[in-house]
Length: 381
Ligand code: TXA
Ligand code: MG
Image 1 (cartoon, protein in one colour):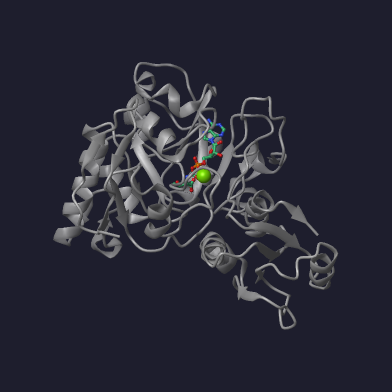
Image 2 (image 1 turned 30 degrees about the vertical axis):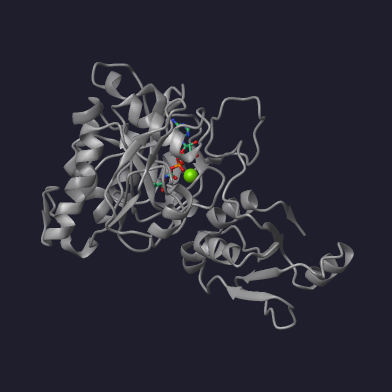
């Protein structure tokens, strides 16, 4: 991989297939500081230079940039520019009816970008969890400012999704771009979300001009998406902030929050995140397991003795008698979340045919972990 290669772009003779020499530029998150008035200082020259280069692409071209956030790496483009949004969908091969989250760098941008007051219901949650891994839905009421928001980001929903990330690199990039940034996870559609710059490179090399490398994303699963505009309020996607935390901090208005059902009708428009699509899948087949004893039986019943098999354990499985690759996702659910996608990718690269993964219970971070695993898995035994 060439870290310093020049960003070249050539048009193919076929219609509009743009290819890039994807550049990876390092940025140091410890060099970036926001004060309590959202003022930014950067005290490392090359970090500043690389951030400015990325910000320029976002603010003054139709192109996209991958960047680290505390949840997963995002693939950003200006929410005000239809062409940038089209380039996001194109690079990921993402279905056009799956809407995007718009990222801001300070709470005041909800007003300055969209001329909108934050609905009361979100205030206690924003106070506690922003900046951080929480995404809220806001109403689209077509005032002049909101008309600037690309319709392609919302995929015909009556709402748009907004998040203020806590990762200094993500925040600085948005701040310097001076535009709101639409950013899905920076994986190819259906693949596990990326938590390292190398994951993004693996999926999107040649398809985007630039990846900012800021090391590993710690949370490891995406943000929690909530809809406080519906009655009762909904948890659309479990993520970095748990259901229990939302009920506790949100107070009375959030006591009856409903968790969106896992599977929706394929003919319905996508109301809730990722429900319709296969997701988070490595190339190998993933099988969720509740009981270690059933693995042996499954292998023999399906004549899989000759296959290359891996087992990812969480809390209880030992894997001592397992004839294959064994790896431990982590002791706490926090650690399991943080490792989940990168371990699925790592094991996949070993060329295994089958990955058994030990389930966890759905309490706290467990709900987001099991949501991702259920989507990655083809069956549960
Ligand atoms: O942590 C995250 O949220 C990461 C980082 C990069 O910020 N982003 C991310 O984006 O996970 P993406 O596009 O992979 O997932 C966004 C989810 C989708 O499942 C989408 O359906 C849902 O948010 N979503 C976006 N706008 C929505 C809307 N207006 N109504 C309902 N769901 C919406
Ligand atoms: Mg995604």
